[in-house]
Length: 146
Figure 1 (cartoon, rainbow, N blue to C red):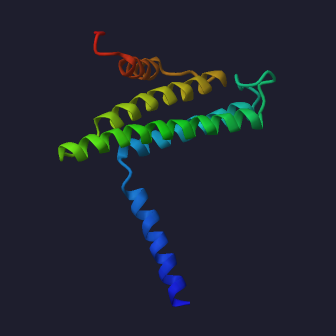
Figure 2 (cartoon, one colour):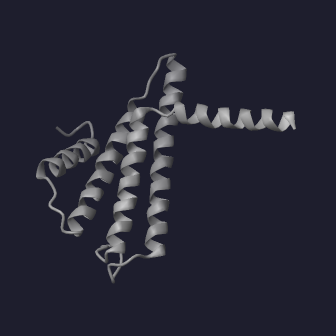
Figure 3 (cartoon, one colour):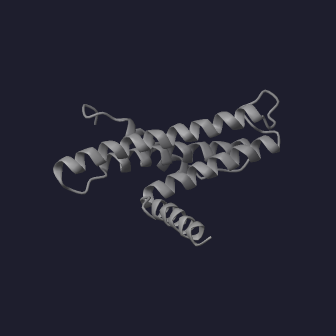
């Protein structure tokens, strides 16, 4: 019985350690992704979803949305692995790629939240829309663009 409690405590400690090690920018991304998913569900629930012909809820559209969110997290993981490889090789703390990727996805998901709000007839502040569009556009630029 005591070994069971020790194993449970170790597992809980590992989970807590994992979640406390996630950078704030990744938590922000997870928050915005959650907002996008919930606002998408709300749009479907009230019959305003642009994802379905009827505008209603669709388990397929919801599943595709979740899979899209999983792919975003995998791309962020890829960026983190790149940062980790560079940092380990150089012996420095480095997270520029992860931060840039997270910011781009935050902007992209944020625009989607605003699109969902607009689909429901909610007025959307242009300053917020513009800020997110600028963030997303800046993330798409290559070195040769100004």
